[in-house]
Amino acid sequence: MPNRNIVIDTIAKIEGNAGLKVVIEDEVVKDLQFIVSDYRRFFTTAVRGRRVVAVPSFLSRICGTCSVAHLFASLMAVESAQGIAITEQTRALRRLAYDGLMIRDHALHLYFFVLPDILGVDSILDVPDDPDDLGHTLLHDSFDIKRLGTAISNAVVGAAIHAPWPTAGGFLRNPDPATFPDLLARLEAVRPKVLRGIDTFFEWDASLVRNTDYLGLRNDTRFDFLEGDVLNSNGRRIARPEFKDYLHYVQIPHSHAEGYRFSDTGEDYLVGALARINLNRDLLHPRTRDDAASSLSAFPSNNVYHNNLAQAIEILQCVDDAIDILRTVELADEKPVRASSQAGTGVGLIEAPRGLLYHMAKINEDGVVEDYDVIVPTAQNQINIENDLKDYFDENLDKDEETLRVNAESIVRAYDPCMSCATNFLKIDLIRR
Amino acid sequence: MERSPHQTSGTDQQERLVVGWFSFTCCEDSTILFTELLNDHFDRWKRMVEFRHMKALKANNSLAGLDVAFIEGAISSESQAREVKRIRDNAQYVVAIGACACTGKPSTSRNQFASAQINERIRWYLGHFDYGKEVKTLDEVIQVDDMVRGCPMKVPSFLQTLNKYLELFGIVEHA
Figure 1 (cartoon, helix red, strand yellow):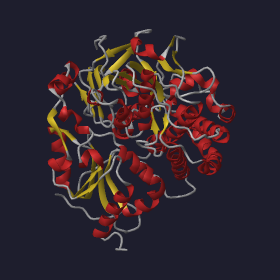
Figure 2 (spheres, rainbow over the protein chains, first blue to last red; figure 1 turned 30 degrees about the vertical axis):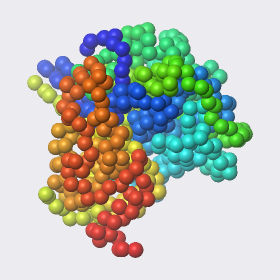
Figure 3 (cartoon, one colour; figure 1 turned 90 degrees about the vertical axis):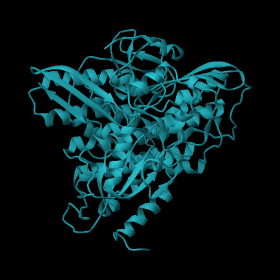
Figure 4 (cartoon, rainbow over the protein chains, first blue to last red; figure 1 turned 180 degrees about the vertical axis):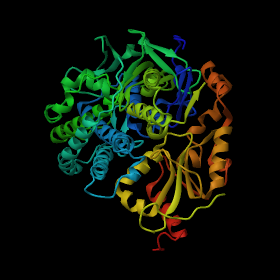
């Protein structure tokens, strides 16, 4: 695969469908292609020439499940380009909204997509109706967890999907503090259910270990999805505006998605919850650290299945962080911070549920977008996924094809690459010669 | 079209509405919203609905004998058009879900690109894969019986539409 250094012009999300093609010759893996097959929508081209005020909301349509992540990354890019400094209240409310996103998004992946693998069933639809069955209990836990994440989003940003209230400089509408006591009570009540989920993913013995490099945001003061520098496993620290300079774009002939290598190592790398917990577990909320201590003993980890466990721990982190914010935030009737139009280029680099998400906006003096770029986490993980799968097939060719298929699917699912990929991506094409 | 009886796979003999849920070019926000609706409706829908094809939730899927196909997303290529026609052939009714399926937007953005906007990178993708000349709405490709609009879909409209078909197929009585 060529390692080409091309200017990145990522135009659309990757989400939905992907496949896997493995060619085996004389019981040796000769070729393996992880193929993202969703059609591009070229959104970053579509926003060129548009007034910037409408762009973040438009770009939230890149992804249904993490639309708040794209919205916030775009807002931060625009604010950076236009020299807008947000208030502490906006900063706190964005953190709170993000906690809601992570709680709902991780729970969807863990309980709806991964849990059936643990239970040995095809689908949550096959979980027994027996209330004494652990699968039934966990599934119904997930309804409460997801519902709570959505309730936080509804209260803070107006909706969990394509949120209408956030804008450049703050919020078009402030949340109603009367909703906070109910959210606080529900957050405390859900903690035992979240801990039951953490135990479940800790006890799952699935394993695929391969040395890899991890990239994630690090804010030295707290476990943070929205602020910090990029850190890698070697300790290399990169300021957000320079992040893209370290990426080598790789065009993948068999995939609608691109890939990336990290120039510091020249190797593949992994972004997402596993990277975040590997790099930042010392910064977790004290309650999370205490109550998830035994599960945290698994980290640092090179087992890609521990991305699931890391997400389960992050749900607890977000519950505890949200409790803190709801207890301490004092809302003033703030209006969005505005700035006169100025030309500039800005970067928003945050942790989406699936890993580092980069938005770059170049805006002219009339407030019109001249250039826009997006790099999504699944594209960054694409080469890593492929290399993990090569490793798996190299080591397991003696297994029957159904086992290979099921395990390959669960490896990709561990990355939580996107909504539909996560459960059904594999139309596996195994060719033996 | 192959028809199959509305029957449960479990021990009770209650008939169920046989549905498929499909996603084409879009952000899948309505699929996400559907999974959120399961928080409140899972147990009831499991009794009344057989999800015969729903890639977001299960790996073992079948197109055979769908009562209703819910289809999200716009159609970007000939291969997608063939696939959605196959779904149409296997479903008694088709419901377009969400803005991209109903209006095309925002997935049809590239239909308005001036030639100057189509740079080398875009040209590579358009030429390398089977992108159609234009992105199409669902009803430009197949007959659509109902539409649930919104970005994401409007929940009351979806629930009303689902209930309409539950009544139509005699799964529930008209309220």
